[in-house]
Amino acid sequence: MSYDLWYWDGIPGRGEFVRLALEAAGIPYRDRARENDGKNHDGDSASLVEDLQQPRAHPPFAPPYLVADGMTIGQAANILLYLGEKHGLAPADTEGRLWINQVQLTLADLVTEVHDVYHPIAAGLYYEDQKDEASRRAADFRANRLPKFLGYFEKLVHADSGWLTADGWTYADLSLYYVLDGLLYAFPRRMLRIAHAYPRLMALHQRVERLPSLQDYFNSPRRLPWGNGIFRHYDELDPLED
Amino acid sequence: MSYDLWYWDGIPGRGEFVRLALEAAGIPYRDRARENDGKNHDGDSASLVEDLQQPRAHPPFAPPYLVADGMTIGQAANILLYLGEKHGLAPADTEGRLWINQVQLTLADLVTEVHDVYHPIAAGLYYEDQKDEASRRAADFRANRLPKFLGYFEKLVHADSGWLTADGWTYADLSLYYVLDGLLYAFPRRMLRIAHAYPRLMALHQRVERLPSLQDYFNSPRRLPWGNGIFRHYDELDPLED
Image 1 (cartoon, each protein chain N blue to C red):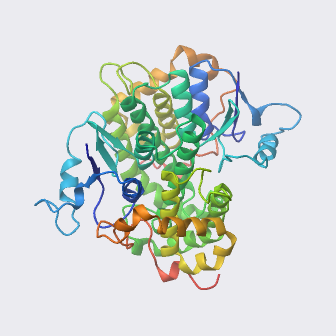
Image 2 (spheres, each protein chain N blue to C red; image 1 turned 135 degrees about the horizontal axis):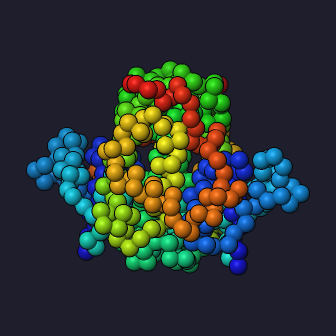
Image 3 (cartoon, rainbow over the protein chains, first blue to last red; image 1 turned 180 degrees about the horizontal axis):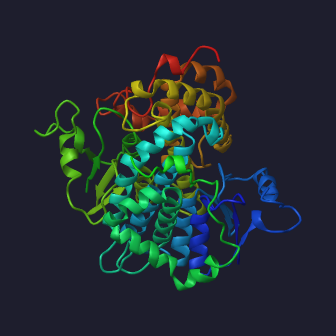
């Protein structure tokens, strides 16, 4: 059996949480909105737009969603909960399973805050139409929210294993890597200035970057580059001094 | 065994997602930050502030959290996942269990958007310090986000049962009620104008309001009134016409 992943082409976005888990575990999947199947052209995700119109018992509110075993599963954290249970990408006991889900949900909260840095007034408006407000929200994010989240996640990494559990990586470790990588892309000046305070996070970032099972993916066109997705880089939102 | 729920006193907030499930299922719990145990006074949640300082293997990023079976479980959706599995407050099969979790996560997304209507620039600033931006964000919320979410949830309610599943209420039905009740409090003019388009949601709201197992709770001081929490009412954000 193979999974069908559905997510917007052109940005890593929240689809990348799922891709990293599938790739690191070597689980076959199709990235449907990126397939050159006569429908998708130039990142228009035409097949996804069409698929979203299908009537379903359990429709997703938004991509990503995974079609698996006849089910449609939406919400990135929910997809990972499913994959984690089915493929052993998280502890199997109740406490460990809930803990990894909890970390994933907190990462999702951080990603939503990052999204809103560029869209403080309306998700449907361009960044350029809310630049002044974004500048103020970014200042608050850099000064308050970013260190609060990073300080929290830093404490969660085990000193011995270097991962969120004592026994090696889980899907939430991959997600933590992804969020750190996005922050390093979006706010490189700020991140470089404060990185010394988060040695375990920076080491985890390197550890995932070098995971043998991800090297093929990282060097393939399946991996989308950063750009104008959820994580964005604007010089004016990452000033040298503040 | 009894559960310890920890959440800020004074607002229903995200703690109410958990309270409604515990109360509707008749599960004993202590609402620790609201107990008159010599620590908490005038909604200062002193015992919660103290408890948050405790070192823990699995610390929560923020309240609510539930202490149960020697575990500390954070993130409202994660707490409900646990309670749902343990007390039968959601379907037991994989598809149904994931679906109810998915709906809960989408409700959590909506609640975050409501929170940000009043805090578009910074969660740490007062509404009064970001009123102009809140006015613009509220206009977008009323015009675009609110109908998008409500239209989605409306389609999820079964015509026959009146609930999210064919078999009666789940914890996500209680959460859906709570979010609708909050929207009716925060945006009464807008909600009354558009309610006719969401007959199943409005009927579900009434159905939970009348659940026999919740009557004792609704008439007790355990239920906190709406106020300046996540859902707020400001006349200027809910104009008669727009």
